[in-house]
Length: 108
Image (cartoon, rainbow, N blue to C red):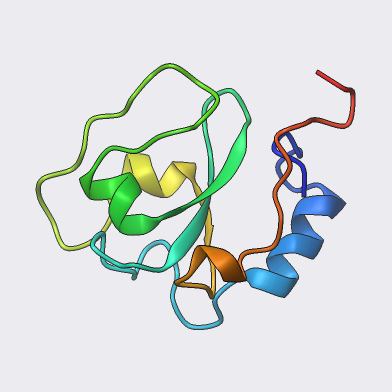
């Protein structure tokens, strides 16, 4: 999957079909979970990161300069993070993740 794949694209659908968690969702997964999720920033970049790192440590898009504020309250992810979360992935180890390329198809 490319780091610039469009939301709802065939490329994204195939990736999610093979990697999306079957039980956990972005609404039900604890913000301290070690599971990976696929995230999309406001500029359309996609990247995998653990839910804990994204929600509690504020680790954001590796291609954008804006660092989000970490969340301090609540058991689950905020509505803002849920909007950025494409899906919870079935992996808890980076080695198991399918490759995500930072290069977009147009060669940007």
